[in-house]
Each structure stands twice: as C-alpha cells, then as structure tokens.
Length: 109
Image 1 (cartoon, rainbow, N blue to C red):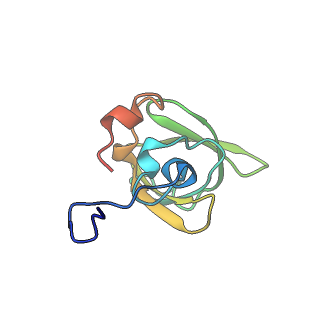
Image 2: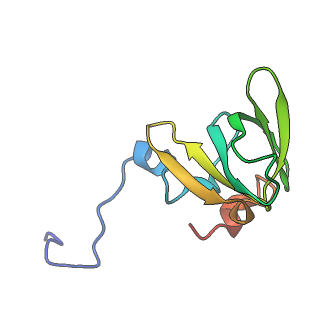
C-alpha cells in the first residue's frame, strides 16, 4: 500500500542527496576546500576576506586567497560559503566553533 495520504511520510533521499552540502546542513560538513567570504566580524580588518578554506581548528578557519593565508576566528565572524553544487550559505561562526570532527554531533542545522 502506498503512503500517499500519510503526511508524515517523507521522500527517501538518494545517496547523492544525503551527502550533498546544503544551506540547511553545511554546519555539519567538511569546510576545507569550500570558497568563503567573511560577511561580518567584530574586527573590521577581517570583513570581506575572501578565498578558500585550507585548514580548520576548533576556533579558527584558515582562508587562503592565493597570495596570503588569513587565520580568522570562527566565533567572532559570520561567513558566506560557496556550495559545491551552486548557491551560497550564510553561517554564524558560533555555530561552527567546534572541532571539525565534533560538529556533526553538536550542530542542530
């Protein structure tokens, strides 16, 4: 019997969709290799830094623009990430201010 009338029934996602980085789940995923821009920061000198995430710790994203690498504190900034399949996702740094391997357990989004 089909669940067409069941409102609680959710469409099963394909394997590709489950692993895809989206606006809703970016805080749980690997950030290294993603394009990023510092959208907002308590430190005006950090605002507008743009490049690729090359390294990450609990509290820092290292962003390289090809000529220079910047150590940007996560908790003091808001970021805009370029998603691999197109689009962008804005993330408050405090939502990703965990060790990369701990983020999937901590993140609610």
